[in-house]
Image 1 (cartoon, rainbow, N blue to C red):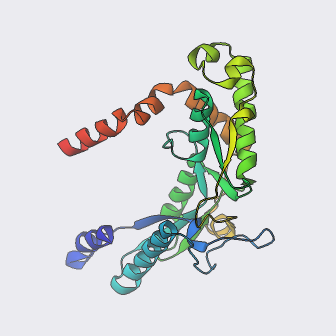
Image 2 (image 1 turned 90 degrees about the horizontal axis):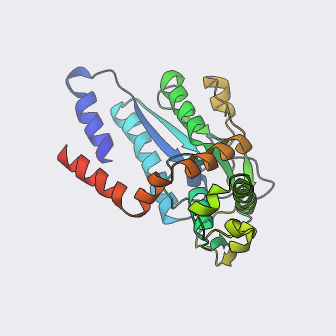
Amino acid sequence: MNLLTAARAVWLADGGKPHRFHHVSTDEVYGTLGLEDPAFNENTPYAPNSPYSASKAASDHLVRAWHHTYGLQVTTSNCSNNYGPYQFPEKLIPLFLINALHGRPLPIYGDGMQIRDWLHVEDHCRGIEAVLQKGRVGETYCIGGGAELPNITVINTLCAAVDAAFAKDPALAARFPDAPAARGIPTTSLKTTVADRPGHDRRYAIDETKARVELGYAPARSFEQGFAATLAWYLANESWWRDVLDGSYRNWVETNYAAR
């Protein structure tokens, strides 16, 4: 709301200026799907099931309201689960990878069969660019990765990829001696089941037909390609995620942005 208020004050004052306010949202605002339900699209009714997704739904509604009430030129995109380089290590893929490298448990919510549509961050950026360049003002576009996978499949893929990486590169065992793979033990040995989190939606899926037809958008990477590149990036950029985890990155951001 603060961003919308500021944008209105600057962009619509004195006769208005050329502008576009693009809002990046999430598929979580649509709630959850059954296994046989059709994928979410732009006409799916909102049904958020957690306080977080409810707050995201509220932001979508505010963007719509500023457009219809004040004439702010807006677009919205609702994307699926992102992954890729530079992702904060609280998210599933970087968290489980770093845990695996340190021999820490891989906590799986419930049965691990929650299904998500996995979208590489660079494909997501391409989708946003397409909306900005070709999207119709006031419209919403769903941006998906075309890769519906249960969490447990992603976790098993990660475990197998870590084992393969250690087998291929003996130097990894010296860098990460606490990893089971450093001792020839399968990374799957770290898997552990924990209670499912409250309000945890069972399935998300995106139908990006509108974005494909109107904008020419389609994901350029399969999950296999994107995941392999992501794993290689995290192994090659250990200093980055170590700085994030020990607070150095956060302190750097706070110091530099405070100075500005």
